[in-house]
Image (tube, rainbow, N blue to C red; front, side):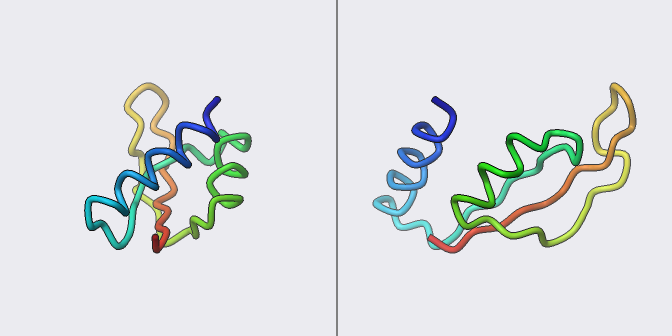
Length: 65
C-alpha cells in the first residue's frame, strides 16, 4: 500500500509542476528506506537527533521527478 501511495503522490506532484521531492526517514526503518531507494530517492544528508522520542537521526532523501 505504501508503494502505491508514494507512486501516486509522486505523479500528482509532477503534474502540479514539482521537479523534486524530499523526505526524512529513520535509519532504523529499513523497509521504508528500501522502498524510497526503489522509487529513486537518494540519501543527501542527516538531521542529527531529529526524532524526539529516542533522539534518532533522520536521513534526508531527495528524488528528481
